[in-house]
Image (cartoon, rainbow, N blue to C red; front, top):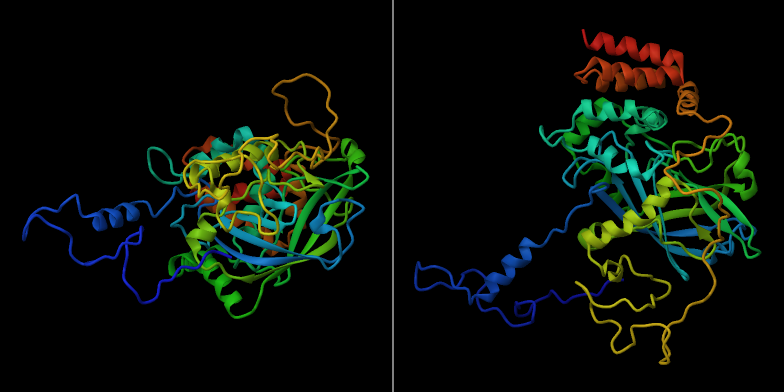
Length: 489
């Protein structure tokens, strides 16, 4: 995979290969004198040490990853022309990065937080990145609100701490978050490990077959290990005793040969049905009901190899929802549309303009051919090849074959709200989720929510937050109001 370096016995050298005579004493101007700027061994070591960390991700900073294999188990060629899905039994190398969302790189794994699910398929048509979460929905439906949302989850600019006031002020003023918040504070809000949770593409994506027929699709990854979660008390204890619990569990399970796996399923909607579906199928705060579009099993994902170097292969790994392959494309989902730009832009800033050249990020089953050259981290891999197109020197050429099908559009440009469908509102699916829970699950949900809302300093914010849950389900709101009132006595 990655280049191997000889770190065995032999002369210690500088980065340029010059032997080092003394790695324990710096050069000085006489015994006890000041150090000399000519000591390049000292300067090189200190300069490299100062730069050993790249900026951490603003979100999804804390993560773990592993390589694996995706195997096709059902024929889906009637829906998509993607080659990695073209034949039953076909295998594709993958890399999957799990993460928490809001915490920093130094946080604890056992936090109440959505888990990132970033999956890279190294296909023969290029890398395909599917970047979702362990929940099928999200807090907001428009990318323009994302920076504001994350600012409420991060440290307050004055106090330096996460503030309940900020979190609940935003959520209560953004009622579309009610569904995801119900997920987050339910039993699945703190998975016991990365192996014991489901994954989702979350967004709606386009599939196109060889005939040009279009379908909308949602991805589901159902854990074969079974769902296991932590209670808030269990998580609090584990976070203090073993902050690396999820990362350790994933690594050690693969070392033991107990390879975690997921059954891969999709929901498929013919494109023509989207306009009349009961919910807006491109609204990230909503799910498609299984009774309307049953899940179809199409494959198996197995993780079977740990990275050799966490920094090189996990910290420097990059994923972008804009990395598509022929037969798969975006939908009008406004959150997805924003992420098509934001993820690539974040990685160009964080890892550098040539981040795609790193072993974990570059294509494994094909090669990248383009005119992009130079910039920090460029290794000269293109040699004397021309860096423009078209050219008369045998360079790469355009195919004229779009990756996905065009969308038919009409109307005027403007700052339009996401269209509402027949049964759309911000509360209906949150209410359905609450009523699907057992009584014990509801009890824990109320306890988790009320404990956090009770920390809010202003009554109007707490009341507005509770009102959103009451609109989802009357009993839900009443129980939550009583629990918060009891805690605020």
